[in-house]
Amino acid sequence: MRIEKHPILSFTEKKDIPFTFEGQEVMGKEGDTIASALINLGITTFSHSIVLDRPRGFYCAIGNCSSCQMTVNNRPNVKTCITTLEPNMEVFVQKDKGVFK
Image (cartoon, rainbow, N blue to C red):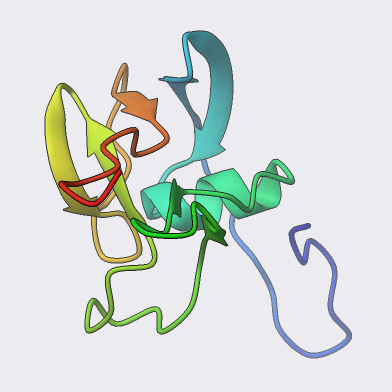
């Protein structure tokens, strides 16, 4: 969900940025982080806990935790809450279950 109208603030139109999530082409907006673009699309699971395989998603929004880590352009453990979206990025839910599974 994006705020597009506000009684006091004005928002400039931002251009669409195409990227893929789990192999499917989707759109974000210029200036989005990967995490904010995904949340706007209704996607909230970014990885899973190592031991119990529980879903992990957006949490701290400042890069301190590991909840938003995803595989981006074949690079694992990218903190998507602080990584700016770029055209044609390939983003995947973190698949690695670690040494415990």
